[in-house]
Length: 153
Image (tube, rainbow, N blue to C red; front, top):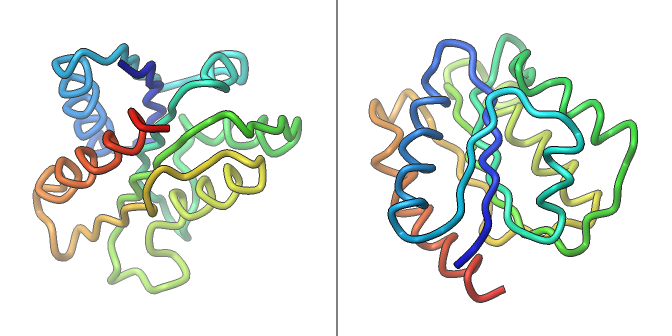
């Protein structure tokens, strides 16, 4: 079974609720899963040879939520290469805010992790609040596909 760190960016709790459900599901499936609402660089790097999920809402002009921003900045500033890391990103947003802002936090994390040579195990999932009132309706099927890749890699 896989060791999976779930790193969350949330402002009003929606992304945290999704991450809670995801972490519970992963644990029920026999994986070693831990959720981080505020993470240090060392905690993230502790998964450098394992699996990581980033689940984040987007704020304001497409920014990363304040609880996840320090981790993003530390990764960007220290730029540790992560060729053995398999990852997935669930980006939560609202398309009515415009294309350049929609799911901006998740898009930024996805880009950074790719630049750090981490391997996406599935394409980023963009969850549009205008379409999906309950994000778990799309997150859970995506997660099951992501897990197939996480276990195979």
